[in-house]
View 1 (cartoon, rainbow, N blue to C red):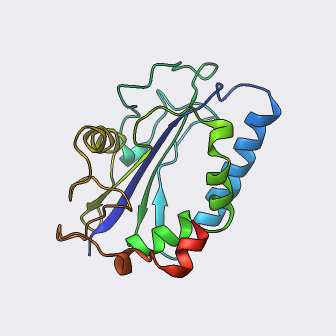
View 2 (cartoon, rainbow, N blue to C red):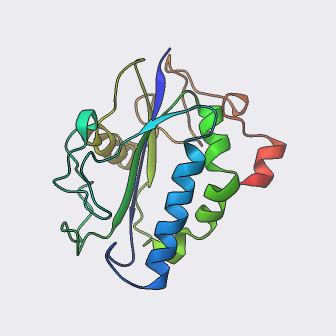
Length: 187
């Protein structure tokens, strides 16, 4: 059974190394979100640097997740002191469980605060795609999918919740994702 890959990317208003309370708050919420996600049904794994420090993304060893890279529109720093981005790469079993995890609980609270931390870039900030069972998506694939989504819109190989696709490439209906009266209130 294929798995669902999710790549997210956002440009932060200040570098990750910024000592301000707002940056610390972002980190604290992010760590809580990761802990919560790791216990969610449908969550399989996420990219974690083998030897990375907080804020070290470029040049870190990401193992099977591949070499770290970012979209072409990211034009800020690339050192531990100057990097101003937040990104994730994760694997899920299906759209419905990913939707439930993302649009409820502490992650929903964080989404409500995203403009406190992130710049509005005019670019998509997440993309999904299906990968074969046992495959590990790479950072390069995530960037490529996000850039394709921005340039061409949703397609079976790069899509969002709003225009999702099943593993066989057919458009996913609201019931496949979990969007309905109950979840609409959670969004």
